[in-house]
Image (cartoon, rainbow, N blue to C red):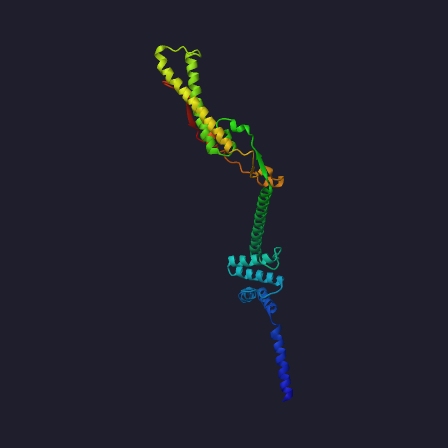
Amino acid sequence: MRAALIAVGVLAGVLASRVATAGPSQDLDRARANFKAKDCPSAAPLLNYLLYPKPQLANPTDLVEAHVLLGVCHYEGGNREEAKTEFKAALALDPSKTLEPLLFTEGQVRLFNEVRADVEAQARRDAELRKLEEDRDRIRKFKESLRVVETRPYFVNFVPFGAGQFQNKQTAKGILFASGQGVTFGTSAGIFLYLATKYGLVGKVPLEDGPGVRRLQQIEIATGAAFFGIYAWSVVDALLNYKPREQVEADDSLLPPDLRDFKKPTPQKKKTSLRDRLRLGPVLLPSGAGLGLSLEND
């Protein structure tokens, strides 16, 4: 009786040992055998169990093989998208993985190669995007490290037509002063030239033209005075806002050659500013002359 109990115990130990040794590797062997026998309906559940929801295989090579075999089973079952997913998982673990034409069909190899080409193309795009981001970050840090100081000439404050305002980066003011001075100066100068051309510098004016000439002279003097008043105002304003030196943002011309090539701008249509589109010109009126202000369209 005692010998029988010992024999039963030994047999139970052997069986337990066999159960303990059965594991993911043996399941993969069975799945591989089923796959070689073209029995994907039996191989697919085993492979799916080994991979999801958590991989049961510790060896990366076994994981790659399991994904490939499951992908091929999906392909044979008509599930191309699921097959592509498994092939991508295999290539994520081993980007150099290939399928041997002697072991797999032409269609299986073709689909795997298509997925591999897509993965490689995506990897190249990702690398290019990372490179672009790195270059942008280098440019940003380089420009932040620069300290560019702009020197502004003092005499520009006394130049008419808003030059001081434009130097001080006050474009709106500059346009207003330039327009005001341009209109008043042009009107005064236009009337002077008109009267000088018609009556000469000595001013021999027929009696019947006297009232009209006098009115034009009054306009000439008034607009001339207005010009000097606006000019004086612009000078005072420019001096009050004048800064001999000012730190400005670095532009791309200061970048190193390698970064400057990266920042080559795409040619774009030139857009002129409002100041560039303003045009002043003399205008003849029935009772005299004046200056017209026009705006060019793009």
